[in-house]
Image 1 (cartoon, rainbow, N blue to C red):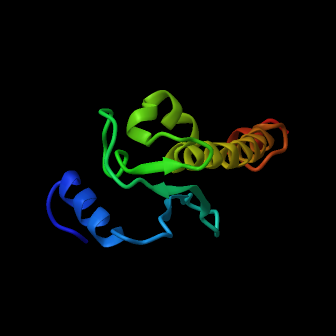
Image 2 (cartoon, one colour):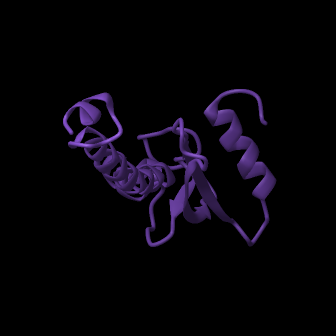
Length: 130
């Protein structure tokens, strides 16, 4: 971990890559959700591949945004702005992915809960509705 500010870390990264031809990079985001009674955690890991620019560019900045150019674009995240970043970033993709996974868990749990409360179900209410 490089101590200091985001700008310090960007400066360090650019100095480490000085003169290097391979400037490929990727952001990684992993979201894990754990529910009581469900043995396996739900895990969603997503990536945003790109390259590191030679110099920082852009004003909408966070972390390495001024030097990270996502694949398919010719501008840094800082230049592209939040609108584009919210659609293609590793965090946006991981959040969308975990949401899609959670829909299935919620639907399953809802059906189980409704079955429990149906006449003859396992819940107290179901047992009394026989």
